[in-house]
Length: 68
Image (cartoon, rainbow, N blue to C red; front, side):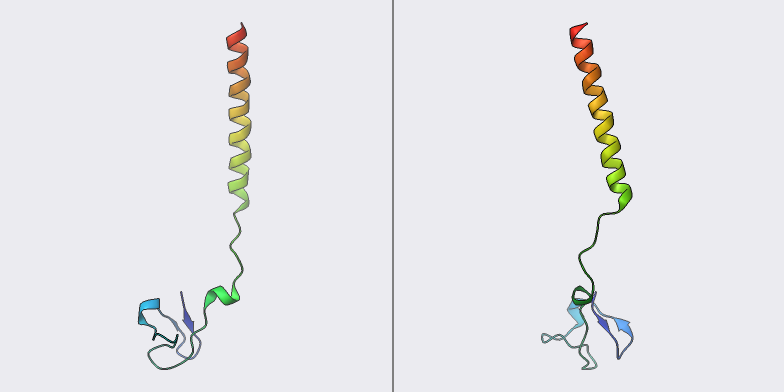
């Protein structure tokens, strides 16, 4: 969401002028210019690993069940 330092508030993209200024005429800073790409949280990867281990173990149990 675009932020105007002079007005000290956020604006929606539809309220900005076509050249990227706020309604008061100040240049608006884009957060994409300052922020980098968002990272995936560590607990998401923990869940992915846990799911892979669980499904791997269930596959091993299924193979053992087929041959017994």
